[in-house]
Image: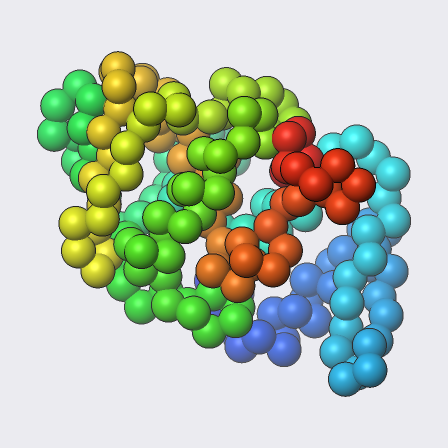
Length: 187
């Protein structure tokens, strides 16, 4: 179950409590309370792959995969290849982020633009990146068109690695490392 689904089904407080409890049980975090008595999660796992657990439980993607590697549409309601280099996608309507923002094509574009600005944001490597000349056009409130500069048979798999966050996330947090001021290899 995606974090977004958990929030929709159980509400923010209960979903956040489950996430923190799960993380604590697995030994990945310590839990603290800030001035407003809201829990925060502090990562204490020294593993070089702890970013996987964090991003897979805090971000949403266009598609997911099941335990057998089969594609499952998540934020996407549908997609259609118009030709070898053009893919049109319809996002699920009425999806809200944890901060209440509605997922629209315009908000999705912000995530795409943020992911595209880095040469190698993914620790596994640049193979998860879309070609730098890939274009994204907003067609309607929930629809977008990708135009790839060349055929990309791995495009759907790359959507699994493209993290979709709210405008507030990208504007205030993102994946920028405080020391280096960039996101290369830090996702």
